[in-house]
Image (tube, rainbow, N blue to C red; front, side):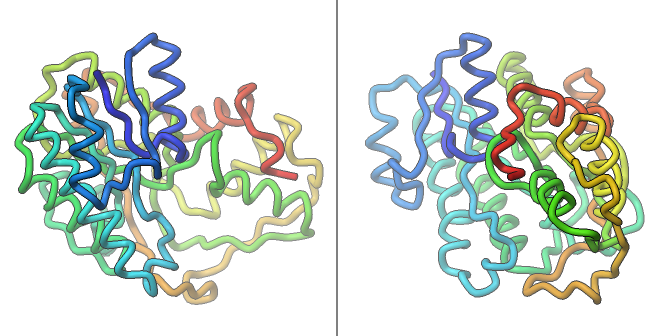
Length: 294
């Protein structure tokens, strides 16, 4: 039995959908089981024959984390450690989702899994601490670092920019932060592959779509494909560039957060999708939640 934690979030919803589509037996929890309380986790796991745990729960409000440090630490650090302990107690294999924000963003080439972490903000620091908590509390773990995640369910950058372009004459987007978008469906595919193979070496893996772009590049492509898909009606909206300094935020963002996907692709024998292809899949699917762009 697979235990999916955080199933109401963007990634959790997609993993649950794919589990159901593939007729995979699973149980799912969200805020109904307090992941910061190890006794609550232990009580839920009792007598369920759990052999996999997938944790999609996290505190992801990057800017808010700067002032909400305690809760961010509970959800991103303490909770993964608790879940890892339950995995170790039950003999379950543990898949935990992490982030590119564990790096400081000062590199100029894709980060590999063996490079030292150096987070700069509270969100990144709590996620890095959470990775350490997982590693210290269970031997059978997979930490999947991803980046720029978007999906059909929930708020995300793509929905936000489509709505903005339909309601404004121009949008201003940061053009000096580089990374790679990740479609939640693609990350969910990798989670399912790891589970189905059941023989993937434990450890840390990087998993995003392929490519290297700025947020401005991403927005330009969203506009192009959004017009084609019929979601953007204001075709004259200008997409203007700005710098990180011109768009200050409470939390510092990494200037370069591209992750190397060589390890995950070689280990699973797959080629991850190009980010443009995944954006097209997102925009043209019946699962696109059009009410989110209204």
